[in-house]
Image (cartoon, rainbow, N blue to C red; front, side, top):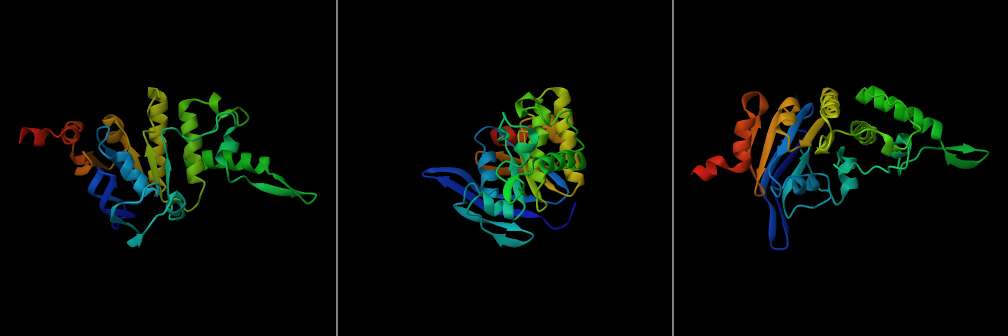
Length: 253
């Protein structure tokens, strides 16, 4: 893990009218690490990530990439700086095959007799290459519609679409193991470890502390819109983190 944070969020506050969703939150993420963000529903996890990925603009606070202050007006600005996300919905077009999903909105083309047509062969080969080289995944068929794939395979296609962009440096994964069985969950956690080994900063939102402690280096705990602690998984336990999530010390006091 690098000494200098790849991404820093300082004093992030986000208000929606009279409602404060985030209050003075700091977050750091390093290249080659998995940072988990945990907390109950309404703790501000999704809002924090949407600020990082440019979907929301902070009411107060600053974001730094490689030590340089940045401002994101939209998701495209964040993507340009190498920050992208794979959400729980995956945003896949189920009736299309994996290659069509991989290049959805960014289709590869070629000229045939002066006419621009889709380069389906190249999109297929690139999909196959990225799935294998970056994720170690080989699909039995690239011709089948994406809705025929298993949950873990669909997750792999969504991740492959994100990592295909060479400038990707930070990948946010929102509940990637939700609704997956044990074997598919294990495969997805293996993908996360692979992305970490490739030097990406992976930010994992998860309700499963077992998954978090298997793959994460650090855990950022949100509670009622604030960060209430950051723990090293190697020096902490699920019980300690759960205590922070539910505010055990606060309640005791």
